[in-house]
Length: 279
Image 1 (cartoon, helix red, strand yellow):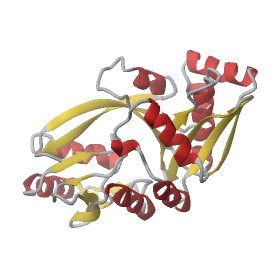
Image 2 (cartoon, rainbow, N blue to C red):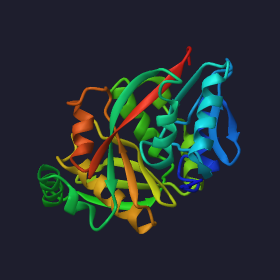
Image 3 (spheres, rainbow, N blue to C red):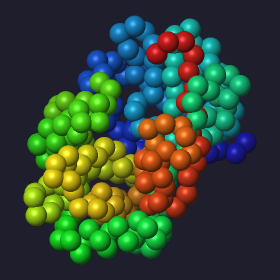
Image 4 (cartoon, helix red, strand yellow):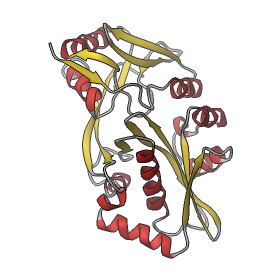
């Protein structure tokens, strides 16, 4: 029997991140385990369960049989369920096991940056040009801890784009992420902070988690490209080998946000979302 070494606790398996997510949603973490295979879900007040926001995966030294049995336990649960996993590694393997057991309600392309060498070298030509343009116009980007004012900056941007309640993360959420080792990349121009992003990195996995840009005056073109570049470089310095850049706001292959992220990714993978019942 071949054993699969699922990556150890990544950003979305880290206790601090799970705590922050549960507190933000008013839910309770629940560990579903089948033998050595473990997956953390969040149980809402109505009893429904779902994976954390992001790219979680099962952990443990598991066999294919263990993942099949974990998928069967999830599929047979009487509670409403929504599962969206990492499109890489054991997340992708568990997703294969869930197909034909739990309905797929959505499937989106996810941009992934493989951190081998300088990330700028793998950016598409337009993305590299945007970085150079931002630098020519005096934009700088610094890596540092998550700052107390990131939440205000981020929520202001979410109001501008009319994002749903899930994305209006409170200050306690960001405070927990800061204690859990998340880092922030901040771009500045002549008018001050123009863009900022939070990255999560733990072990081999990293994620471009949340970002926001100033509404007025408009940031210099390429500011966010520069933020992503410096974030990827820092993820690599911290030992990550891949960084999830994420997908678009829709499932359309020409989604504007997806195209932006894909221009800085080394590849894209499809990620299904499985759902049974109302979650």
